[in-house]
Length: 157
Image (cartoon, rainbow, N blue to C red; front, side, top):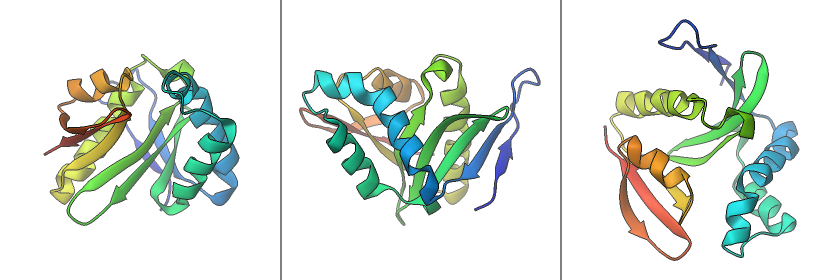
């Protein structure tokens, strides 16, 4: 995978570049996950630094992970995996200073366009009670399953 620049529909917004992750990125990606998710995981009684790292590292695949570069600065990461019948967003973490900026919607627009081009639905899982649930629902994701910890969603093009 090579760097891919995504131009915004609005000229006043900086372009997003997706840069392929490498194994050297693991520490900063774990740090970002902890920074973004710690409060939610603590609320559920599921946070320890070791657990957060181990869970991320166990599923980390550089070839499926894209770093998000916004105007020359690291803004987050996304893992987007084709499973044959569907694609899955396993991780989408944005730096806290990017929250509420519209960046997440722009990134999801690109991923939804990719899924649409493949003719495949997108599946993802969100922590129960997380504000991210409202975000995905606004984008048209529909709940398919729920347990005390997670909610599974699907979006169909």
